[in-house]
Length: 246
Image (cartoon, rainbow, N blue to C red; front, side):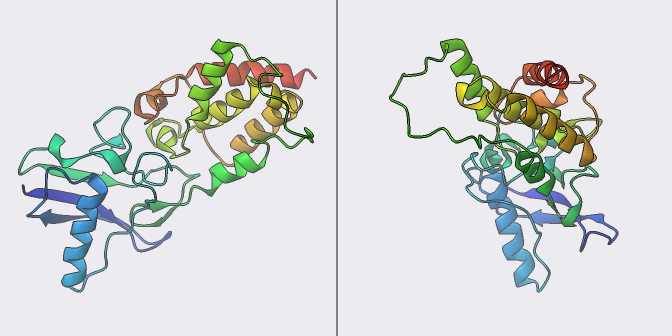
């Protein structure tokens, strides 16, 4: 199948960018979207041109490294599917696909489709972990966790930090990412001792990074490859109000 690609090219953070059009004449329907970019890059290198820079790692929908806007939607048209698992069988011969990087002030473009997502790392470093000395590992089931809470914590823990929520939000808010991390630990006994300090630190760091406020558009939930609910954001807000009172 023949696929035409309109790809955002930008040589550096401060350089002007523009769309460039390429054609991949021998795309295979079984290719993933990233493999299509691999084939495009092989073509470009044979022609002596710079390949398109894009992020990837596991290519199994787990690591969150991949992530671009495909035809105006973060990760593309298939719901709950990361770019690395978006396959060309969902397209028709002759289709044109428009590819852009995540666009947010807190995610500055490094080159082409690659953005700097270190702001997420700094939010986690602010408190997205358990640091108290818990001693030896307790016996299994020594601390009982309600089944509903355990399931919900697992749902929030599936956040892969890809940044699609930021890219899709009209305000470029990181609320779903931050809320998933806060809610995951708030629901488990291991996270309880630092619950208030963690919430304050992570929410304050999110604001300091320049992410916008959540205004309940729910676009983040719609594009999240793991289907994380915006109920996490409501929980984060409750946790933050309670933390301010302590």
